[in-house]
Amino acid sequence: MNVADLKGKTIALLASGGLDTCTVTYWLKEHDVEVVCFTADLGQPDETDFGAIETRMRACGAADFVGVDLQRHVADLGLEGIQAQSCYESRYWNVTGFGRQATTAGILPEVKKKGLTVLAHGATGRGNDQVRFQLISNMLDPSIEVYAPWRDQEFLNRFRGRSQMIDYCEQHGLPIKASRDKPYSTDANLLGLTHEAGRLESLETPAQFVTPEMGVWAKDAPDVGEDFTVRFEKGMPVQVNGKAVDTLGAFLEANAIAGRHGVGIGLHMVENRFVGVKSRGVYEQPGIELLGTCYGFLIQLVLDRRSRELFDSLSDLFAKQVYQGYYNDLASRMIRTAVGEVSQLMTGTIKVHVYKGQVSYAGSVDSPHSLYSLDSSMEAEGSFDHRDSEGFLRVLAVHAKALSRVGQV
Image 1 (cartoon, rainbow, N blue to C red):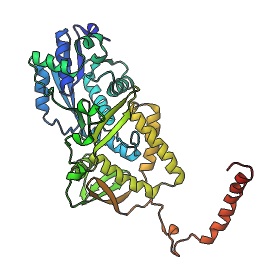
Image 2: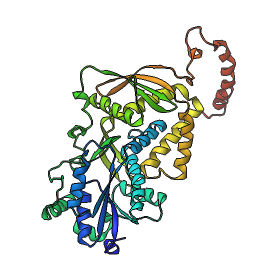
Image 3: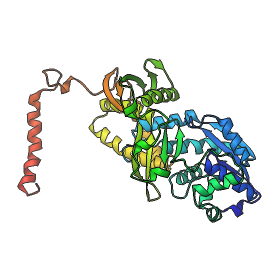
């Protein structure tokens, strides 16, 4: 689809209020396309004034503006990531992947209410977000067509990158926040922030070049640590430091505490994008890192060897699924069902100590499904008799000796 196909039509645009969507809105208007902007409130710490976003988008030519509160939705998705312990390439909690899922799934019904059938976005043709917006939309509502200006040759003929877009906006007096000297770009929601592009594309630029927005660098954290206690019931956080919380409240509390102690701040990654290239990013993910670590300690108590092996394989697959935009397909639903079975057993209180970027285990109580018992004690306690291992080891030895005998060792 290209802009010529849209002439005279009204379309929906996923609008962040940033440089790309401001440029796209005005450019489409110049090509006789009416734009209705839809903006998701994901609790993004870098953009809390939605009145300002609406003002910017209308000044850039939007015919209408719709704001949708999706904070609880993205918090629920973040909790699913915690319950699955799913980190992409072992470190990244998919904070943007979950954000795109929440945005698209939450805004599509509003788009339909307006009677619109084309959904546009400002994601580039080199990144993951174009895939997420496309696949999520196609799966949830195949009748919606997706228009991506960054894959439209006419748009590409006009804009090669950020500097040309800034020139264009300044030429037309558009109220953008971007500037030529901004050293990197940021994408945000309450689960975390992604910093990339600009100076960060150079691997000689340290992660510490970023100015944290959800906390402080570990070196700048207080010299005195802080205890953090979270109570999970059937996989749901219900108390933080003795205070009753829902899922959103748990993230807000965890973000504040983890952030001020440098937990989950400044994760450097050179990751494999779905489109086949590597990208460098610096991430902030304080609350999900803290809550996820606590949940991981609880999982250690409950899962036996075989269930843990299966869980870990599902965890890795789910991380890839979310990263690549396949949250809604059959594989992801199967994984979520299996993880849901595990979550029903995840009841317990976990206490940790946070200090200068580190989360240290401090204690656990009241976990009725824990398999940890005195049977593993080195003292003369529990029902495990040391002598019973003699026969067990004789059986294992048969195979071990056979391997040696036939030259397989």
